[in-house]
Figure 1 (cartoon, rainbow, N blue to C red):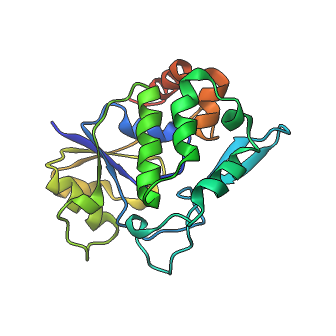
Figure 2: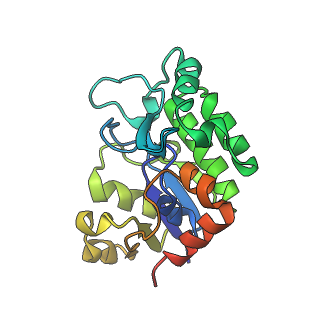
Figure 3: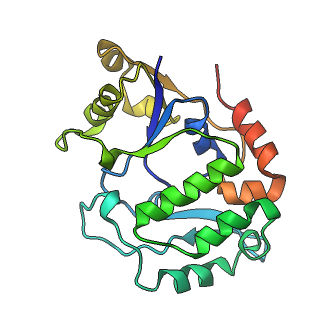
Length: 221
């Protein structure tokens, strides 16, 4: 029985995001949807050196309206910009040993925005001992005219998925009966009871093992 999860790539997402990689056969990075700089694709929250919760932004260029995430580019001076931004946060300037690889990758953005995001996702998952295969929606032969739930159903069918795991917000977006008609069991994760700050901050504060334990305890039935 194939179980998958599909989600936009977020910049160092909160630990609850990683429930989508926990216990599924495949995680699909939804990089074919329109980029927005008002969500979590390009920013997240860490505790700054002065003890306040502050935003840290990824070094992305501002694309034209309607650009898919897969086509968003880094700033020309992305490394300089990112390293300057990281200086404001203790988790970046004094990382714990298990965070060294993540912070190093964070400071050296390469190629495109989605390459950067997926790279950070992969490293974070390894720290959390999550080994789920990750693929990009842009690598799949899916009808580009599909939108909303039809796009998700198209990906599920392409991967022969029988179970689709979605984040808590999916309860307002998707119709169980629609998925059921296509032979797919839609399952929505419960609200996450742990920290809503970036997974980087969570691992810095309590370590990778405890963060993973929180993820496991928040999977629902």
